[in-house]
Image (cartoon, rainbow, N blue to C red; front, side, top):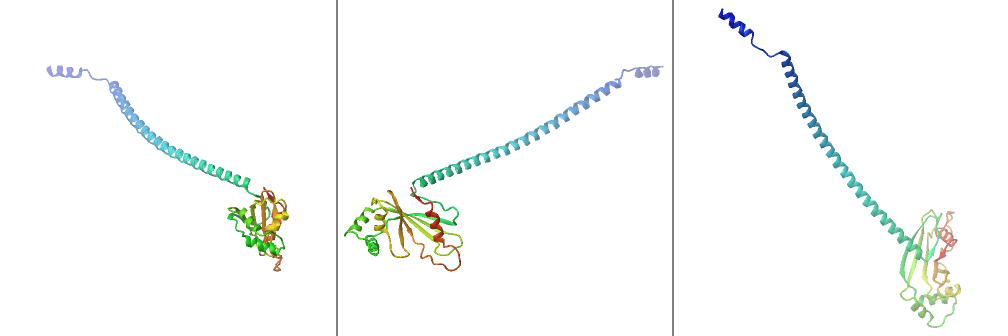
Length: 239
């Protein structure tokens, strides 16, 4: 009888309903899933942050490069503007205006001291039968003391015959010549193959080199010096 009573007591003990266990399992999985999702989101956020930091660093480098390029461009632009201003300044004060359009030639411009002597000019005058008073050329040389001559040397670069260079000398009209004859009477040469007075105005005197006798080597090529001279003398002006 007692055994039966005990059995009945055990069988009647309260037990947890199965749906409670199901709910607990679901809650457990939910918590675990939430934790896992949070962990994954956290990892993803860190990776995203790191990636963004890398991109920001790259963008900063690009911006720095662009800023440096801008500085370089500004510097180059300023240099170019300075050169243009210098070129404009030189052009505005240059005694010669000319064009070589269509002629294959280069030009070299240099400034040299006045290198004529009284003996040299007097010898030229004698060859040309020009009459001057005694001591005239000494006074002329003294007038041009400390004067510079601007020399333009043109070189023909096309296919042609010699001579292939042509020279123009420009000096200030310190003698205040009124006529070309007066200038010619003092500086001209009568010997072949030298240099000759070309033009003048109230400010400048122009002396040109000879292009030779015009001898041809039979090749029918243009003489470089003549090619340059003919072009320049059609448009040359004294500023």
